[in-house]
Image 1: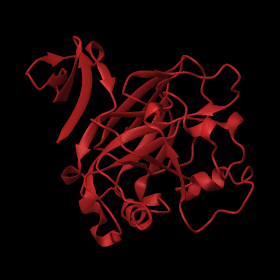
Image 2: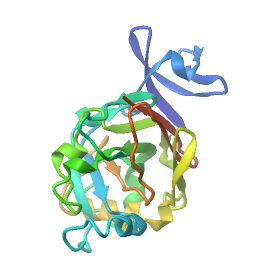
Image 3: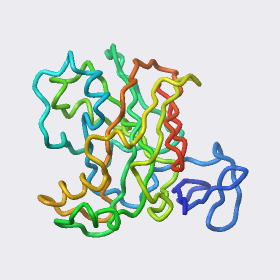
Length: 249
């Protein structure tokens, strides 16, 4: 099942896909541009992000890396203020010389998870959505440890449009993902190329922290990041999950 959260006519509604756009829980059918799209989670919890989780992307940044990568996942946290929804606007800082998208599979935890084994980990997932996790390279302290100003910017993490229930995604490592800037494909990847897959990440994280319903794991991006400018329209797509639209201003 695919669900979304939208604002319309002064209220927040649950919605599902419709041939004409989306259908509210009360039956009204609307086009995508008639509503304000919100992140598809009622109450987002801790946002856990992965860096350099695709080998090709790590190789892409090899010249800039200031220290050797660890065998452990590179993990950092983000606050809920960083989240915006589908068709939202993200500000490009006026002093930025290189700002890029990051198309990522986002994993939403469905129940309390503590010290779960990888073999059982996917049973703790509520669903999946698309993420575009922007980065401003100018603000990086170094390429291996992203700092707060790069990865916790207001409106810099776009989620949506749909939360796809886990039963509709039998294998999260079997999904193609891509990014288009102004209609031109600039990034192409596949979740099978993750260094640490979804189940392994849940096992790793739940060994030292309790994951709660609504927690989100952003699983990293493949190679193919290019500089974007104000006015650019960015679409991140993941097969079976959705197409996430965002515009820089």
